[in-house]
Figure 1: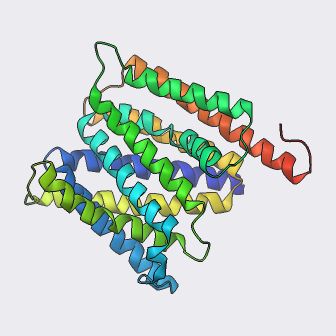
Figure 2: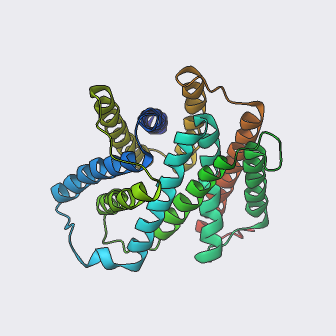
Figure 3: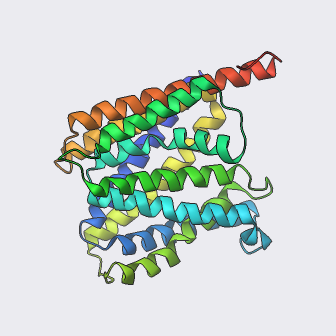
Length: 296
């Protein structure tokens, strides 16, 4: 029963995140990407800062100068800028399909930089998953869009953020990390605006509604994700993360009139299959390790 509740919460979290992406894309159609980043960073930062203070966490402390925290914040900025730009300038379905490679990139980063053991089966799955990314963006093809690389930059940044999170001291709470990460987007957006030749625009009442919607669904998704992982078994709950791609494909077609192409669907399927295999294999390795059995 708890696995069912956890699965429902995970699907709800993915619906929230896909809806947040929809609002972000709507905003970037009338506002500068840098301005959207500043507003999202400020709104999300204030929400998580308030949650951290409510928990009794200190926001201003030496934790800010911790190297893994600073690296995490930097990669949060890189990943978010890459993904928001990808949402803004490429079809939502394509950006979301490429984003599904993030768990594979996390496994790769953990193996290379944290020396976590990864067997040949998972290395093969990671390689196949990255082939899936190439199928989506199709470099060298006549239809290749260089802007699709923005989503790849997003994957690299977000994966590096998650790898850095693994070495952050346990004393630093998730609320503190989230507040730091969001607030780091504010100066990044302010610096990015003149570099992109953009200017600050006045929001219409509709755009205020979109920014409010993005923040509400983003926060709801975050809490639902945490609740799902705490309630059910990770091996059962985590695969439902990939429902975000299905929802994004529907939103892309219905809301933005950007139906997913055949190669996006094929590549996305390859990425998802590789991610699921990697996840299930990782769970099996952990179970065997707990029993003292060989993990090869």
